[in-house]
Image (tube, rainbow, N blue to C red):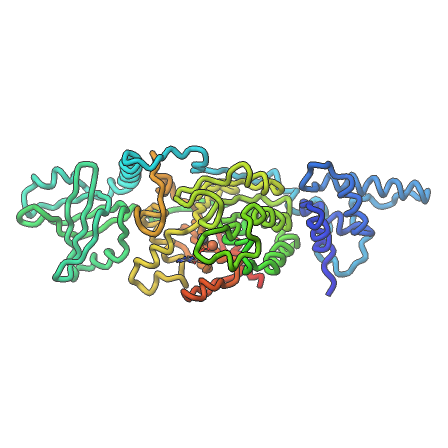
Length: 508
Ligand code: D5M
Ligand code: FE
Ligand code: ZN
């Protein structure tokens, strides 16, 4: 089957190193001879231009129509930007009116980024940094819990009479089972530590499964007769209010939420990526104005032992160059926001600052916004918390329930949201960098929480917050086969920003 003209135009442009607005592609595809029109547009483009805009293309087509008209002495009866001369019946993707499409709504778009810590890293890994980040975490998360319990500082509990009702807001220091099968949870606040006993036959004991070290919770209960331990009646998480009311866009506009592209891997799903990019050029995707990429743009180098055997591109800069080429397949008039992941060439410890100038310059063609992992991006009024998702491995490994598995990553995401923190445990599998502030706490409830990393698709909702884990663009690697990870390849969840509905499109 012949390729649609617009797809052909995009390929012609990208093969010459150009990207183009969707409108520009439509104009070129609608020209009498699209191939020649591409040649003229490229020849006329400024030497340093990476993206052809609709006005560049109009100027080229206008000039050509005017000169043809002059040669034949016939009046140009059709305005040059009207595709009425188009006779290719396969060109079903040419909208009747060029004022439609993404370019027409570009002014209506808004992108705001919060929580970008790039360039603001203060940690040097010294003891004081740990004190500081724990203190900041406690302050931020305790603030979410204080209104819910009548808590006392740990130092005051010791002097309260045995048998009193009491509550603590503290960071989880230790969780262990007792010889009789109960749970002893040690909580720490800014004054000291205090033990809590969660009896195994109480309903509240189910919540112990959800606990992770270093998260901040509140516990209410009764002090033992000798006053040395608190028997838990209730455990509270900082949580999202049940009544949380998310914001929505006030026009019909969508965002594609993806992650884990892994360019440079032999398993990179290039054909599927191309189908996705081709689809973005069709009218069906016209309202997809944003593309959010939650990390692992490239496969990276030296990420795990033996990785070189599976690399298609061995040089990290070449990987980003190739990623940038694939990004050019995406319509030039889409807004792209991306954060790094654990395969990207930035520090591994979280929060991860965004790419340095050299990598940004490699990826400049699309003028993507590049921010730290995690960050919150607000598009058309809808806030999306972007986090690559390394801690999901830990949440899934630590949680005993069959509900919290790689097949349902949204359930692990829900736990992070409840904890209002994207990666609580220090010293576990997720590497955390101590900083003056805890950039990993979720201070403000997002409307959408978008992660990746586990290469599994997951869509859910928790207290009205939409949860999306976005699958990947890499077929199963030998390593993943060895650990039984069967990835969801080439799935693109599309978020309606006006309704917050999510539709998953598959491209493989
Ligand atoms: O992660 C893709 C998925 O594979 C994610 O769930 C982690 C898992 N993974 C990948 N490499 C390892 C190693 N070496 N040990 C344990 N689990 C792993 P990605 O970040 O794309 O590699
Ligand atoms: Fe990945
Ligand atoms: Zn990853």
